[in-house]
Every structure is written in C-alpha cells, then in structure tokens.
Image (tube, helix red, strand yellow):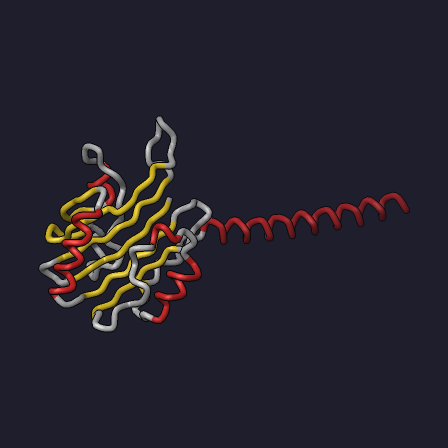
Length: 193
C-alpha cells in the first residue's frame, strides 16, 4: 500500500510538471511565432531624436540623416523597425521641404552617391546589373505599393554585402536618400538585414 501511494504521488507530480511544461512551452512558442504586431507609422517628430540617437546603433548608416527634423518640414512620416531575432531593422523618415532645399539636396547627393536609381524598390535595384539592395518605400501614404514612384531619385550612399559568396546580400546594409523634385519630398533611409 505504501508503494502504491508513492507511485500515485510521483505520477501526479510528473503529470503536473508535464502539463505546466506543455502550457508554458505553448505560450512561449505562440509569442515567438506571433506575427500580428504591425509596423507602426509614427508621425510624431518627437520620436525622431530617440531613434536617431538612442536606438539605431550603427552611426555611420545614419550620418546623412538630419540632426533634427527641419523646422520647415511638413508631412512628416517616420518608420522604425527595431532589430529582430531574424536580424532585420530599418529606419526611414520622410518629409516635404521647399523646392530650393530639395534642389540643393539632389545636387549634393547626385555627387556623393555610390549608386543611383529612378524609382523602384530594393528588389528592382538589387536585380539590376551591379545592383545593390536599397529599401522599400515604408513611409509612403500608399500602403498597397512599397515602391518609390518614377519621379524619385534613389541615391545609395553606402552599401555593404555581408553575405556569403554563394548567397550574396544574405546579410548586409544600405543607406541613402530618395528625393522627389516633383513632390518636393526627401526620404532618408538606413536598412540592415
């Protein structure tokens, strides 16, 4: 009788621990695989400084970003994807500026850009001869289309392939600006994957 009580207690303890393990493991897996959290487009320009100076760790990739959102900027949109377990992160800020400022930015970046494209997105750019990955138009008002319209000059200021020889651009980063003279808009981006 003593042995049977001991076996019952051990069985109950093992089943309880197993149940807790199953429930706990299920919870952890469901949280890890949950893709329901959407990217939040932040319009509050007060978040810009926190992201630029505190959250984005690679300063070289954002050195072309303005130190602060210009006082004359309008239609400000900002997107920040924090680094994930998969390794990707992105920071993009877009705003309208006076035509004179836009013309000056185009002249400046046309000279310093390592790669230049007209419109498109990272897939279009990286699939061209000697192309490099860029970014998607995360800050666009058009949520159905993530490509820059044809009137945007996309200037890549830096890009580094950190992938393997047989799988180029598997890891790396790129940064630059996309500018529309027509829309008087500039988009600063940095992306790592």
